[in-house]
Image (cartoon, rainbow, N blue to C red; front, side):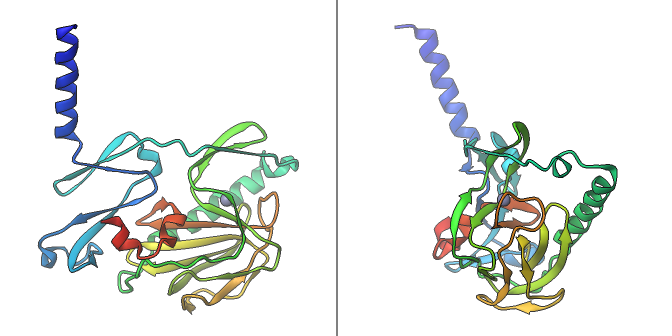
Amino acid sequence: MNKSFLGISLITLLCFEVIADSIGQPGEIFPVMVENKSTDNHMGLVEINGSFYKLVPLSFSKQGKYIVFNDTRIFIQAQDFGESRITITNDSLVNLNDQDRERTIKESAMIQKALKSYSKDMLSSFNFINPVEGIISSRYGKKRFINGSPRSPHLALDIAAPEGTKIISPENGKVILVGDFFYSGKYVIIDHGHGLLSSYSHMSKVSVSKNDIVMKGQKIGEVGSTGRVTGPHLHWTVYYENVRINPESLLKENYLESLL
Ligand SMILES: [Zn+2]
């Protein structure tokens, strides 16, 4: 038996136990209990089973890293979400001309601005319902390749359905952006309150307007193939405090309780 080897292993193990306060998965939300609620009124605390929690989103981009909230350190585990390869034959949609590139930069700025403008007055129940009946065609976190070239990971859920299939709001909220964009096509962002937002891309038809209040289950539009797509589907993104999280997780029953 090699004693020094055993010694090192033991030290590594002990250190790991001291450092790893908590472990979470990329794209998920981690609840950190906050004892004194009165000092933290503006942080968007949620009550779960009688205690108050700060929900910390675990960013996809911080896999293998620690993030810190108050005294809690959360290690975001690295996870393999698989890959997705798509082919886009229309080259003008892949290698943009100057005019289109300028357009995408403006549109991206509009979207970023809207995402930061969420309401602190509404509070979501975090109980989403499925926005569209269909078949999941690409999950959250997949490595993306377009025509063989690596692109940004797919931090949304794709649900394929025939053109014209009804899309509903998964939760109460307020429509804060409606647009027709180069990549996203006909597009809507809904603010559900306290940092929880959702967006809907590639619709054939939008049935809501900016500033509309929508109820859970209310129709917001129809599935389409507008923008840069390979076929009709809903590209559904969920944001929590500007971090794209895994939309499928929000569909769990009693989602908040499931986090504890
Ligand atoms: Zn997608």
